[in-house]
Length: 113
Image (tube, rainbow, N blue to C red; front, side, top):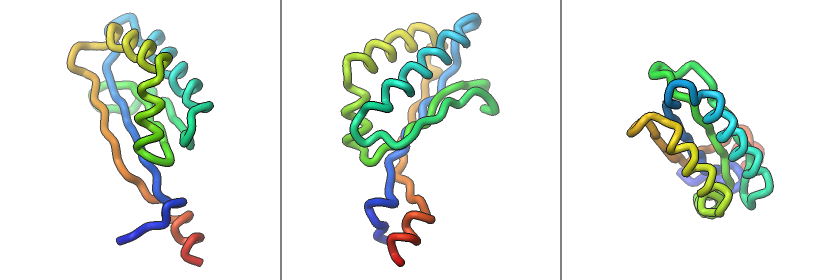
């Protein structure tokens, strides 16, 4: 099924377990990333995930207009530097990253009208 471009988004979810004693630092680094994305082309919105994961992971969700926009932002020097620091502060092999194409049904409905 074809969906209107203005109702289609690219979602990236990152989850990880901070090493004991590094929880606040990792959360702060992820907040830093979310704030830096605001100025990136194609960035729509971001969320910090602070609790509720059955494995105790924290993380973030970012919403982009396209995969290309997300990839471009992920490869900026700032993001690469902050991610390298995050990787030092989390449990080995705990980082999970997933990406999805998502449809906003309200926007799709409005576009069809």
